[in-house]
Image (tube, rainbow, N blue to C red; front, top):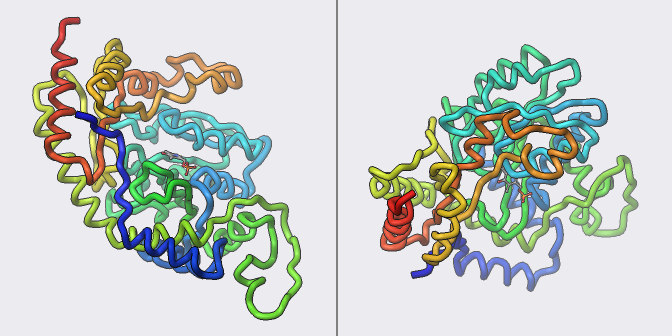
Amino acid sequence: MKVEFFKHSIQEEDIQNVVNTLNSVFLTTGPLTCQFEKKFAEFTGLQHIVALNSCTAALHLALLALGIGPGDEVITSPMTFIATATAITHTGATPVFADVIQKNGLIDPNCIVSAIGPKTKAIIPVHLYGTMVDMKALRQIADQHNLFIIEDAAHCIEGERDSIRPGQLSDAACYSFYATKNLTCGEGGALGTNNNDLAKKIRLLRQHGMSKEAADRYNGTYQHWDMVELGWKYNFNDILSALLINQIDRLHHQLEQRNHLYEQYIAALVGLNITIPEIIGKSAYHLFTVWVPAHRRDLVLKELGNYGIGATVNYRAIHTLKWFKQQFGYLPDAFPNAFEIGSCTISLPFYIKLKTEELLYVVNCLKKILNRSQ
Ligand SMILES: *Cc1c(COP(=O)(O)O)cnc(C)c1O
């Protein structure tokens, strides 16, 4: 049997929508991008969504728009994809890591407080695997120390904790539509915010700081545009908006389906020598991750591969990666919980097209591998 790590669930109606767009006038940031932004804003409950070409771009622009740059420090988690930290570095600011909670891999509010110094300007929490960080606690810390909060919500479009959703207690939430994300068009992202001025600024910065976007320029007779800021080329487009727009209607149902798969996995995995990360509140069920004994992790990955099962690592603690080590001189045990999780973690196939027999095959193979001597 071959079990892919991920299969998207793009449907015929999405493909047809793309074809219709290809047969229309507008391919770049136009009316469909605008429609997508409105519809996604409704889904997230936020006032503004600005569509961008990646979540990395959203993180980068959010930091820039909030005035963060050289000399500043931004606190984030070492248990994340590298983009969370490199977006900080690209502004000229310094990423400062705070360790995570052992049971769930989420950034630890106590470690954030210890990491705050005179240069600290913002916190970027990461809603790992779909479970939200304690945003109420973070809001309190941010208020006490006058800090911005930008959420890395790449794993968490649908999640909720203490009746709070991404973007609600922060300055901005950053979403990803990368190939393996819950809502996907291959590559894409968005920034969500309730702050009018911030949304306006991000719109400007996503398109070279030009006073008019393509759709405005197209409207009737030619009008001059001006360049009012130094911006980037981070805009989204109508072809990919066409691919995303109807997927939004299916998000709730797909979340229920993944929740069901999660329960199936948990029931089937009983008795194995593994740890399941704790879920708090309503998870977005983005990744299904198990923590195996560290000394066997790489072997388990290899043997899953031999059984035809796609598995991956989200993530090795990023302070242990070559560039971060060279740049900041971190030792592995600088953030012991993140290091430990990063050494134990394996993400298993988890998507609505995963069949029950495939799920049971994955679990049986994992059982065989873990029960072998050693
Ligand atoms: C996928 C991901 C990103 C980057 O998203 P892109 O859209 O590829 O830029 C950032 N942070 C986390 C936690 C992610 O999983």
